Image (cartoon, rainbow, N blue to C red):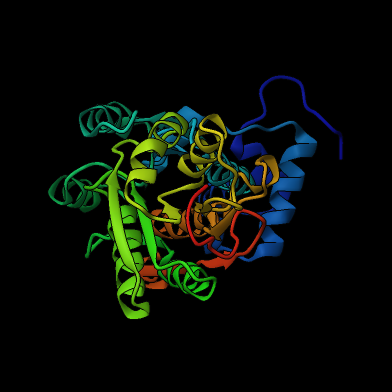
Length: 336
């Protein structure tokens, strides 16, 4: 077989060379799950030898699909999201899909605008830590395949990083080290992740007989963590569990600025396990499954796009666990 023919190679040429119908040749590129895997491989190999390439516009017109998906995150600068994005992009590339990435900047209205603009160009959405209302999400999922990460909306496929077990382990560790007063440094109060983490810390502290002060920080950031240290000391707490590693990292810096040491004077625990290798001391944190949640969400979305909704669990939980490092120590009788 010659490697290329003169002129543009058509799908009909591929079908003839492979000895199959044109519709079968088309399915090898648009619906490979409908024909045998060895036939898909053979047709695609012959197409490559002939120099055939799929016209994406023609495929979209014939199948109603774009081979694009959209991933929207609330803050791409937050270290939790890059591993998630990479996992989605790697999996999408293997499935021959492109990924449009949107950053909502923690604003529901911006997220809605991104969805409206991207929807005509994509086959489905992955919404990570969505700030949209339940109603808006349900409306989107009714007509466009949609998978949520860290947002629990019944009726929509979702992947949840379950930090509750890790939060309980964190509080139990602090109690075992003699801490009787701790603080929870809260994230955005309207988010599912903050509600879950806050509830788990409060419940575990109550069970262990610890008092908890909750500091509302709003948008989780390094600056918010650094600037809350004065208020944190004023609570009388000797340890804190932060909404995420970014906030915890800021707390480490804030204690250095006021001349106190972590963990000698104060113990700090983060959440997500995305910064431990770059903090000093190494941060004790709740491992959060960022990349795993992206991979699972992509698999679910691709199944929805293929029409295999019955093969997708409506709710998938990825369990978190505490990773004990150097930022936690037994309590001193009083702060220095």
